[in-house]
Length: 415
Image (cartoon, rainbow, N blue to C red; front, side):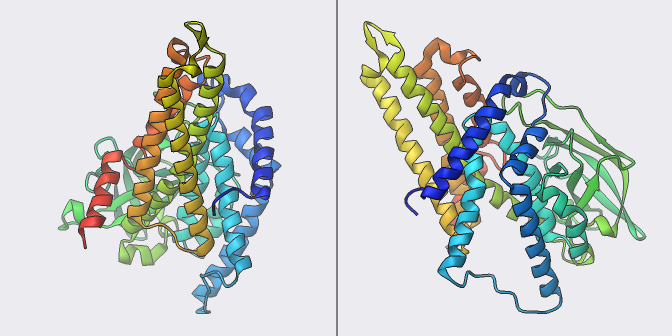
């Protein structure tokens, strides 16, 4: 894939019209007020039929899972050019709204992506059929808000080794204790995938099984904090979760008895990180496109020393580097779409390389945009200020830059 198709451009233009009508007028309220993003996101889903598309996708996934459980053969690879085209278009349909939203309000993408892309996908990929039917559909259609809870106050990048949240087996139930921090959608989540360690006496704490439980708002012993104040992504509510003696039956253990036997929560969480990292290219592309667009317009109209600043070579250098970053990010997005079309997902190292470059490019371009605007770029009325703050978290969540470098290097050295 080397360019957007005419159909993709039509979808993009329609999404832009929605954003201009529904999001741009509310940017200040989303950024500085008390407006959670969920009602607007649900309207986006309804307007473009994303909820119905995901409903149909859910039905196919349940059909496939039921067939697999019955022992019927399941064909995973695309069988024709039409199949590959459908898969590619499906991936593009998911990425185009992300790109367009990130041109104005990246936090909304984080809120949406964690709810549908992480929480919903965790349930649909690792849950039993009963669990998928119980929680999956509401998450995929955005009828319920989801949170994926792995990070703890003392763990940071050492998510598994530093994990202190536990599940203690008591008969047919588990007793969950612990706290989670930096949880996207935490304050408003209806459904939470809670990741913790099995309390295994005699086993080294770092080696204990990782389990995932599906919890719901209002369970006794579960407390959700109010939204936290933070540097950027203000339209993505972030908070803390506190669990004290929360009781969860086997029906809430993601994957059920088989997950308990295998302790597969560690690999499942890594798969989720891989998916999350792949999506950062689309987020970065949206931020970079908008920063470049605003910078070019400002360079044409801002006059200093008797001429538009776009006539100065140092400003031209900044704009040229922004365009190079835009082209590179667009090609990475096309790579993700092609991978979906051919049924070849990225490896963890490839996704880490993508995220490392995309996050750094977004931050560099956004900060250069502030520089182009000078003093105006430091003021909140000029949107490059917001985009610079929002871009920074791309280097932190889903694994810091340093963790991406480690993942890439270890993959290179293992040969």
